[in-house]
Length: 260
Ligand code: NAD
Image 1: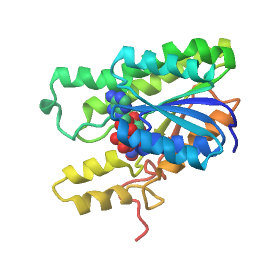
Image 2: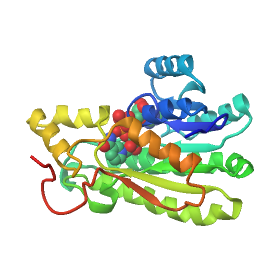
Image 3: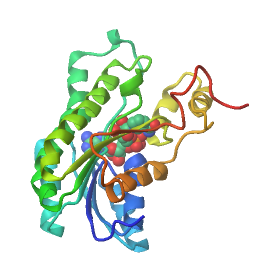
């Protein structure tokens, strides 16, 4: 797949699924601007992928919970490259698992700001540019936004909202030929997943359960999610308002899914 000379913004691209998107889009020839809060990892990744090409990547330090930071990310991209073809809203966080009694209202509000309101803001700021290029938006939602998840009321609520927001925006932006889709991963092995493993009472069991939740018997990779996003951006030109589940079959059938 090729997405040559297109300009792509990836939020939260220094590690995990965002890193997968940065790598895959640069390999497809894109000029990628990506952000995270801390500089070191982002700048190192930008140097590494740009050296390999054929596209290039540029890192911007930005906290997507802050409107001024998102504005700087979007405006800086347009100043640098003169256009935006694709916005990938990936930055997000899954707090440690707790029953509802364990979360405060303020914690929920902060998670809504990070996982949902930041996406609204980035879309609003990027859309004037995406309408000019008839570009597209990809929002990272989650399989659990459809299915629910144990002890994750706040996270699941933010992701259900991302999927619903995506569909509503797709209707409005069709008038401008801008496509808006979401990707709902199941278990993709990333630093966020490793955080959950490290916080579990039995880390080895937690990892094994994560692998065993899919009919395909493993977690997905960051590059696999990057390639799905590239397909949506570059090839899926008659697809809008669709939530793309990428789960290795986690939601199929009942109970444990491994073959052994
Ligand atoms: P991760 O924690 O491994 O990486 C998250 C990235 O976002 C990092 O680059 C981090 O620096 C950045 N980030 C976090 N907060 C930020 C902020 N305030 N401002 C800017 N950047 C910020 O996470 P991941 O597992 O790669 O998940 C990426 C997205 O995919 C998230 O929205 C997550 O909810 C979603 N998701 C992940 C999985 C999975 O199995 N890994 C499953 C479903 C959905």
